[in-house]
Structures are given as structure tokens and as C-alpha cells.
Image (cartoon, rainbow, N blue to C red; front, side, top):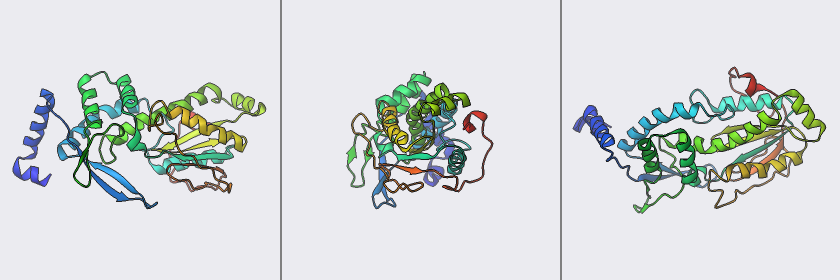
Length: 293
């Protein structure tokens, strides 16, 4: 940015970008791949766009975010305005003080790398009708990667971590999971009589809390009810996101039965939930629907 300000000026640079967008000649370039270490010892691949591409992505985000925010569900907390991890923890803490005895904790393997472009664009197209905007979103998804050794690779799946637009697009893809669980809640468990009826018939009640590609399903009932929800999660995600049509997620069950059992980023753990199983951050006021037990 200092180079742009000193050589051509910010106004001149923005006018140049604006002219290319209006003429429909703008084309994003490959993102530069950077690998950073993860706590597990593996490497996380980030894709760093050019300054020009970041400016266009920021403008796209300003257009798209309010549209999709109107549809996003209250159970998702990551990459959204005025929401944070502490809010997700507070929601989990609230449910564990009710009748939710079990939790299924899971993460999606290589989520940002494996999001299906066709499924993602279908979801974007359902809300966005402007072909110029759709063309820009697709162009960023297909821009490619310049690897750490200088070679160029095409991008057939995924949206690179490090881009301004990527967190929003990941939420659009993962909202398929939110809709699945919210729909089940509203149709079968939204009222106390419905939940009591399910308990009498030996059925579980359950709620989802999601933060990015990590999520928790809180369950009333028996452990086997939480076990059965694994397949439901896979089914909800498979048509839309994370390459599930190409590779089944890897699940690993906790055998210790400990509270908040640890799980890997590619796995799932089931643990017994207690009211003291997490420490919540400052709590915000919830709507009646999101706080129903």
C-alpha cells in the first residue's frame, strides 16, 4: 500500500480498479501460498491475494454480507458481525445447564480446501441474481495458487484461507448444516410438549452450535442418540460442502467418556456434558427461539 500511495496515489489506484470492473476486464491472479505451523505439527496453507484482489474482495464482501446475514441462523458464530467465540461458549454453557447430557464435538477436515465449488455457487446463485457479481465470485474461486516453490496450480475445490471473501463463502457453504438442524428443531422440537413427547417415545432432542468448521451438537437422551447423529451430520454436509462427495469425513470416538473430550480437526468426540464443562465469556441477550431448552 505504501508503494501504491507513493507511486500512483490511492485515488488513481482505485480509479484504475473501478475502470476494470466497469469494463468487465478485471481478472484476479493466483494467490500466493504461505504455510504456517499448526499446534498439531501439521502445516496450515494460507492463500494471500494481491492488494488489488483484496480491494475487490472487500468491496464484494460489503455487497454480499448483508444479503447472506439475513439468512444465517443464530446457531452459527464465526466470521459474523458482532459475534465471537465467547458467545458460542456461552450458548453451549446455557444448554449444558438444561437437560442436554451429551455432546458430539466435531471438526471438518480441510474445510477451506475442500469446499465444493459447484455446490457453493449454487447456494450463492440462489440469493444473488447479478451475473457480474457471480462472475467475480467464481473468478476468485478459480484464480489458482502460486505454491511456495513458485509453481502454479489450479483450484478445483476450496476457497483459500487468507482471502477477505473466504470466511463469508465458507459460512455460506456450512450454513447447509445450520439449516438442517434448525429445520429439524423447528418442525419437531421447538415447543416443550414436542420435546416431552419425544422423550416419552425414547427419542433425543438436540441443538447445534457452530463456530466456523468446528461445531458441537448437544443431545438429550442416551449416548447412542449422539452416536446416531454422526451420520446425520455427514448426510447434511455431503451434497454441499467440504468435498464429502469425494471423501468421507474421518470420525474418532472418545472411549474415556470424559467431559469435552478432545478431538482432532478431522474427527469427532462424544463426551458427557455437565454445567461446569466450560467457562463462558460475557453473555449477550438471546432471542427466545435461540434460548429455548
